[in-house]
Length: 453
Image 1 (cartoon, rainbow, N blue to C red):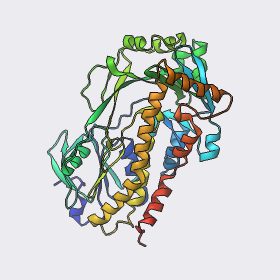
Image 2 (cartoon, rainbow, N blue to C red):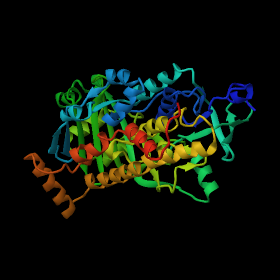
Image 3 (cartoon, one colour):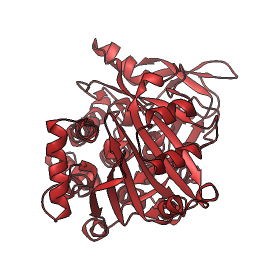
């Protein structure tokens, strides 16, 4: 047994013990949401030695911002972010604009603007919010194995330096990503499998500084604008926008992963080849070539995009999956982190201490089943919509592309939908207009799962 505070019940503590595996976006948000709900004993286990935040830009949609504001961490993120005034969809080979959408209405419609920021700012703000709450304890450099589920969850923690120890808890939440060990353990218990699937796509993460771009007026105009730009072409695209108060231009791509060097690490990342990157986008316009050529050799980061088939369930006993562990997605709707944060917010509602005060496994399971009811269909719908949007943006020459471009042409005269679903008002209404916490409260009412006074 642990002696470092993990098993507090040994000392007569009767609080509900919650363990979270993984300190990514979903894990951090879940810890914060549960602490804000009133829980006092939350342990977060993370394989990494620290949360030295890296990564690139991230889109901060209103459905995410609404939750982060309620959790008390949005202001710090928004202060460094850039508000998107519009988005432009451009033909990569010619730099010809296919479609343009003004995003001013987003704040009026949903209470928050669409913003873009740095992943380090998002994760860092949530982490510091967690660190300020005495209910949350982090255990870094710790791998999890040997998960059992009955009568209550239990697992072995193996510190990188130290002896393994066993932890028992009332609730176990697996937020350990697309390669989730908790998912594997749960499915094995259920006699099921859900292997990670290679999507055949990879992505480059690139960040250029203002100083790198300032000598090229055309490129400087990009970092000065409040615009999200997507350059599309056959089987690939580039999406870019300014972040960090317009000091950085964030560039993310998606393309076939035929040039990807095999990587065995936990995040499927590797150093990419600048030469190969330039070849992949060789038929794009000269401005793109100049932009990509600014990337120093050795600083191209590439990662495989992977998913797994929809799971039959996210819940087993007093254990549930969160974020990429249960609904990894392609990035073509910019909702990966947002959906993990929605998971967290719903868990904060259904697992409120006064709903599960009896600590009975059947009570906790009922709460987790309501979480699954609120979240599973929505998240999986958006996963498929993101994949569909990628296919639509990556069309090559042919009838389908002709039809898509006719819709873009109609958009210029103010008619019809936006072929890029991320920018379509009806899709945004479905995504941004959904208040997951209100829906969770409603579902609890419908199930008669009321908070006890």
